[in-house]
Length: 312
Image 1 (cartoon, rainbow, N blue to C red):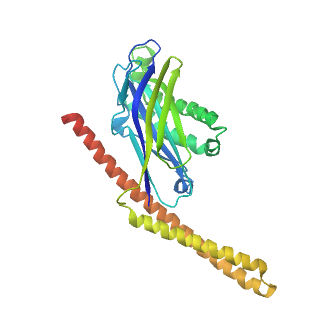
Image 2 (cartoon, rainbow, N blue to C red):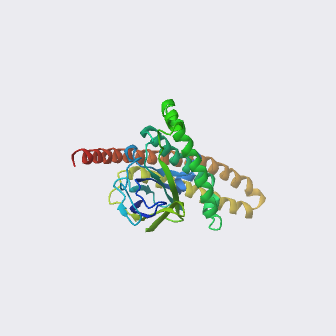
């Protein structure tokens, strides 16, 4: 059965501010994952889930002071992905960038949020091996932070209108301030606690406490596509096993039988190419089904949030 991984950011706590005064912080959380499916697609490598458009600038708590805690609002506190069964490996990365709200225009905020997600996914994809190495992981994460921060800053600056750029240069427009970011790397698909420590410097710091919940869904709306992937995968495995057996026979066969066995191996390799293409197609159909239902769920959730804000 497939499994759902839900990264839940429950509570934001202000540990300290440089002058003790209040802040208006908001979060950009991202869930990234690496598994057999993403690695099989050279254009993907790393999958990702980001907040809804309306969630790019939802303040957790106005005038938040040292010692204050507040719940991260739903639905922006929850990021999820469904993982198929029979995966040989799964890696999860939960990341969050914390901002202090000022006057950055909404269009520039969203441009920065999009850059955060895409650049983070690209940076993780480029550093998969070093992230998987515990001895170099911290150094790699720091390098990723630097790369991503630069991309976000550029995206926000480029999204400002000419008038807004002039106002910023004259000091009439104060852009939102990036407090910092943190990353949690999980080498397997398992439930557990999660703590992110976010700091601009020793005098300005926050913590985010939450966890990862892994559950088995009761109903899978893409079960037909899942079955097709499993069947295609089983076919590839069966042909690979046949080829392995024939190669073993070839190594032990007398000269008179080698040409016949070699011909069988050639035929099996041709069948393998077809089976592998069928597997790629089945995985693409499954991904399309997952994406379609995720879009439907996000739309329902977005409408629900808007209704709550307007009428709740």
